[in-house]
Amino acid sequence: MNKAITDTGPPLHLNQIGYIRLLKVFDTLLVSTQVKEELQEYGIWHCLTKEKAVHLQEETIIDDEITKEQNRWKDLTLHRADVSVLVLVQRTADALALTDDLVLRRAMESLGRVVVGSVGIVIRGYREKRLSKDELYKCVDLLFNDSSLYLSRIFRDRVQKLIEELEEA
Image (cartoon, rainbow, N blue to C red; front, side):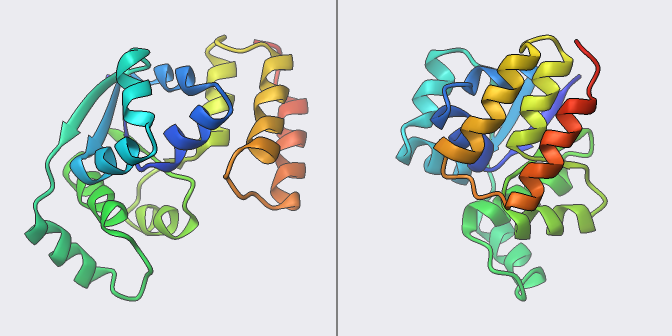
């Protein structure tokens, strides 16, 4: 099964550029209750459920689990929803982790997890033939220019080079 655990970032950024459907590259999207609340605040939860973008599975993370995990990562600046994602990542061994948050990414990587952001999801969409190469370039441009995702110019150049090297899907 192709599962992913996400924080708010990738659904938010993909929705901002009109490509939330790319979350269909995953069979199941695991979302903590805390992340669901953030997605609802942004009006994205409705988009995910209305569009049937992906099979959503909500996971309850109780306050005690969040408090315990916050104490473990006290040196990092993490919101409750971020901490709930860390709990969920440790609970679910067979799922990819999704985030655009650098601090959360580093924490999950330190747990030995593979982490993918919005750019990686877009590239995966291309590899699965959900996007043409022109659409791939368009999505990356939209992420850099029209979403709230912050990516450095150096990273953008690296992504452009990677796309140029990708074989036609």
